[in-house]
Image (cartoon, rainbow, N blue to C red; front, top):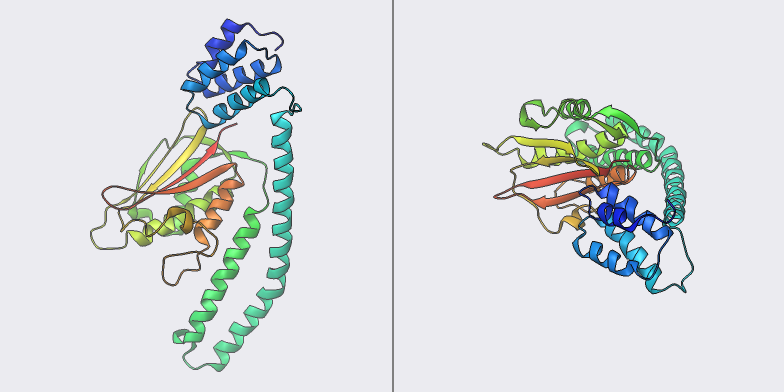
Length: 291
């Protein structure tokens, strides 16, 4: 849009729609002049959406520092995407090679152990091999989420129910959302992240008299979201540390679940977060942006 009318730009910059506001910033940035600094500052003062704020700050910097070489933010985003794709391919190649070498050997070790160790199922060796198999499963999952796929339309409620069935959690969950909502993303990545969050909620709610796990979902103008709310003992330590690869506060856990969930959502241009739920429990949130 060349030489856009400033009155129209002002209206769109203060629209209730974040998409309209972002579109206005992009139109404004194509034809900036010195007088626009007041327009940008006024919009920035009331803006609450992160990606619109970023665009406004970029436009402001372009006005304040015209000597800086012009770079299209879309080009920068494309460069970052290509860098991420290269990193994903590297992770996929390394984990694939490791799994190819280790899994056959692990199967042979377990087979020989079952033959040679008396009462193997109750032995410490069986427990150690079980932990190692869980680690290999986590590596397989990480390999899967390291390869982004083309998003598709799918009914979100169907995916949530499938996961609940796999985790034997049907009677433990209270659903609260539009059962007909169709979203855009990768159902396999979403399921991987949701199942990890649900599994943690089930463990946290295993005590007698625990309230049902609440699963709620929906959409806003800019994103889709899912929340898993439990009434367990709550967070132990920092939420950020809990999502780090190999870190866990739970005895007997490998510490890969939440990091896998985070990687799965990142592959959908989304994220997960943990926060305390009053008076007790944890809120596990998943969100990803709508196109």
